[in-house]
Length: 584
Image (cartoon, rainbow, N blue to C red; front, side):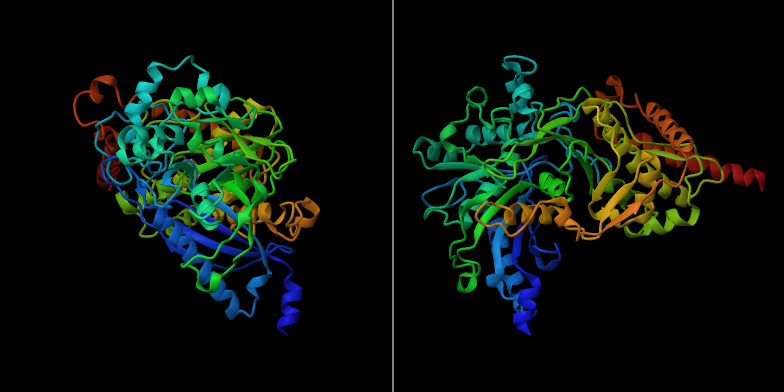
């Protein structure tokens, strides 16, 4: 029976999915893409000072070991032989920066992570240095206050306006690894000493994990892949190499950088660790590596020019495959490496845009207004009315980002009448996520000239069927959701299983048809879709100009993150109650 089960399963592939809040290890059937088992461990974020976000690299590594061990135990309970796991892929939070000692394997400082839900292409000065962190829900977009002064100093001596962007596709920003690394080198004596003594290694989370899992101080492989390298601001996305001019500009010693590999090749083999009982998975090749958003693009099988995916979380991350050419945006989007699935395979590029406030607006309705007690309730409220009844919600809690770049904007709810209730506001909040997504996709279409035929989606919010149907209506194209939601981990597993020397996973789209899709078709006509979108744009214009220069300088600037919207809601409710009282 067990032998029959093993034969039916075929080769298995594991994937480490390391994110900002948790680590997971998942095992897939390479023939069907079926998820067989997984384990998840929450990890801590540390906030040593206002605007600083750090994580313990050793805790992250230990969480990976624990997830692997627990998943293997679950597979044994299912009578699945773990020796059938033929490869492991790694997907990771991007940009987070680690420096460690190559002789001892010890981190020399905490991992410096990105602030909460950032928009990486946001202007540097949206939140002034020294301002207090806004209250929960008022703004989930924080600048990394630690590195803001580093960016300001670098911007004074930058050789030209497009010096960084022309090479990397990225703006000079606190978000990317080079600035974090520069801060560490300037401020952490242990790191400075290790660099002087040629003991220091730098990497993003993927590099730290692969080095540790392949032996660490006893022969670990120090490498990264092109997708993660492209988010450091040190990597030339044209030559696919570390750029000496960029390293000189940031004053980063090139000796501490990892080697850059493709996203699908054997980097090294799993080594025995005291943290893994009986050397679980020892000798299994680690052969796939992708930054999380690129992994989701691969997991969604967006292998053709013009295919795009949107991940719905606290914010939204949209990636559009632009093929073999770098497309530089004129609308504030980022140019990045999408993937390179093999040493001798071509590189693919992508345009990336982000919606700063998506799931965050649902939490705001829960935590600040109290109109729902759980995030899941919003679908029930929206379903009760099936319309916003002309109510529009612009959640510009800390300004408008791409494609507007308007820091003076603040959140508004407009179009209220005596008939408006919390159900309409809930519906308008879901529409806001969809309208913002359309604005980013419109910008992508203008930049790359490839009209989108459908949008592939993933992330926690995609379980909301009303949201998905609204997205199809507002884009006026189909929205396609995979039945297997773990697309990020799936992408890492696909890259690992397809690697030369492993060869257990075919990336031919016809061979990937086992993954079933749920499709949402537009249910309104094109004219209605355009009318709603144009009304949204009118509401966006009304949100601008709230935070004037005079008011921003008059006191605590965080007040202006929430005052206009809160004031507008309270005053509107007072007027509605008064009107009802008079009419009664």
